[in-house]
Length: 283
Image (tube, rainbow, N blue to C red; front, top):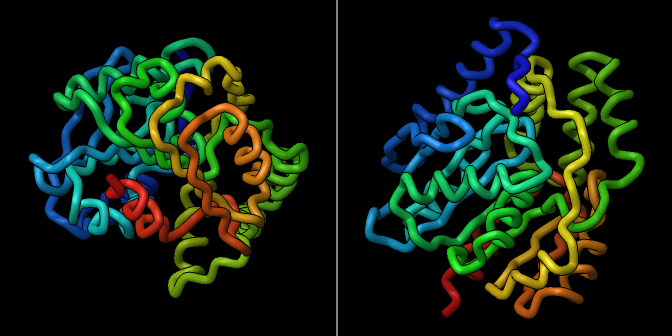
């Protein structure tokens, strides 16, 4: 398990955590935070909503943390018990271990999280690497997954060949280059605080050391284990991976697939709670 430093400097880590803490202090609904023990170390969880409501687990993408769900958590918490979970080895509060992508480690990690929360079965919502983590658990233990919401998930098709070279090239331009990269990830989306969002993501990215490597693709046999209802969300301008190709492969292998491709949207997909909740609350 990779335990190399996740940040360029201790000061950079402190800055990222300060940004995260500011979001947590202004979480849109009442919440409780806790650390749970797993085979990959301690994992940070934010719990919101009625403790007796059906559970939904939110899994963020690479280089981020559960702050990304701050704008959506009130919607989810109106109908579900919501657990926003910091992935290990990313820019959150979980132990800074990086479990191997190959093998069962990530599935076992999420199994441990759910067991610690006394959740026998849940719906999973994951974006990008978080979508891959949700899939990893679902193919290992499909009986424990009620529904899946996959937002531009990794692991179904290879990333675009142009993505990594673009990321590397813009990283050499410092913070200005990182901002350009974040803007490309947003594509045509123009939220009221777009400039602030770009600034915050760029600030985090300037200090965090991203995980380098290729996330393994799931086999046909693994994906055929996904018999639960699945919603695929993604943008037509995703520079990271081709969501239409993800749709095509899943259509061949899973029996219950709904798809919403959003015109002009990039790899960062904002305001997904409406679509997700419509799907999650269907009988």
